[in-house]
Length: 498
Ligand code: ADP
View (cartoon, rainbow, N blue to C red):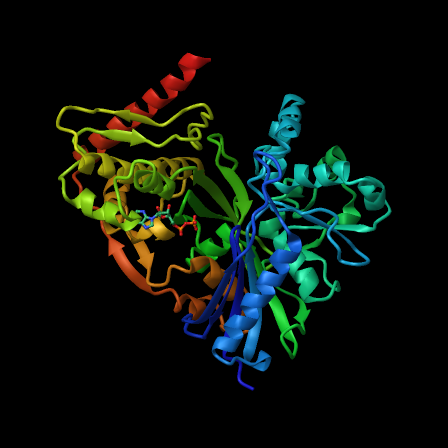
């Protein structure tokens, strides 16, 4: 039977989704299911690994059924997943010994503080490309081994397996035959040497994690195994963490290509080619998704509060009925009337790294209106994005070739034009903003020959809209200067308290 589809399994933090793509990169069918979040203590976040598995299976079957797709018509499965989330299970039974500890969970913050005080920061950065943080899997694995009775001994005896969510899905899809992950997911564990492409002995021994627990690591496009869960055998041929999958789905294959996701938070990744650029400004160095043995690297930076600031205007301030309405207010005034809003609700990330900074509004006058307030908030997303872009440009020494965008707030045309103006670059928004799923499908489809080569896959990236810079340079500089003054005010506020 002719191969007609590739399935992307998109396992996210709040929901599992499955999308069937055809050879044109068109979405043929989608199914999605939310699952429960568990908060056993303040600051702790867990998922039930069986919920993850069953919801992902359920939506995949549903998406296939909707278009009556047979397993023989599926060329391959590609997986993309919430990164860093940590699961430990018994090799013999596949039973998890604890819930999945979700990336957001802060339970190991003290352990990481201790690690920093012991002087590990430079080693971690040089080896893994990361900064020591409780987000990453390493301290979460150690926590499970320390906290579940008998787990350390069992791990030493080789009875336990660790996996990020992709690994957990692959294990279950293959009935425990395959214990594997890809470079992008491995590079978020804080245990993986991104230069040697191997698990790092020193970090394993620091966290007392036996190698036997760890999955084999392969390129993101790779024949991981086959699953017979949907009828006939289907190859599992793609695997990448969500942000790297999105970079791939945006077809940012060349050094200097950048994508930014405007979601609740903002996520920017820049392809830096074969060079692993180590950042001095708190950006992270990571491995980009690819199909060969030779890896490409990427710089990654995030904005803590992006679309969340619009939610705040809508839900707390009650200025808006919907997030989309923000655009109307932005267009109702010619500028923000000198008002700047720095939405540092939970501190400032790269390039400032001021965890005690707090939200700050400057430049209010008697003439400031609700429209100015909304506009200043929307503009703050563009300013924060520009700060990241500028840092990436400086640290990589690469000229930015394009900025491709996705995520909920990228639908705001005012914001996209303002971004083009303030960054002085062309912004390209694809017609299909499901770039994460498309990236996973692309990896799987390229590995199995569903798409002949990258050029054939690239044809599935179609332009939705372009925004060219039209602001005078002087105006741009003036606005950016005002923004940076506002950021200094937010930081000064934090400093006073110390
Ligand atoms: P996530 O995947 O992080 O949950 P999404 O990519 O779905 O987020 O984006 C949702 C976010 O985008 C919300 O914070 C919402 O406030 C914001 N958003 C959605 N549409 C618009 C819009 N037209 N203008 C500004 N912000 C928007």
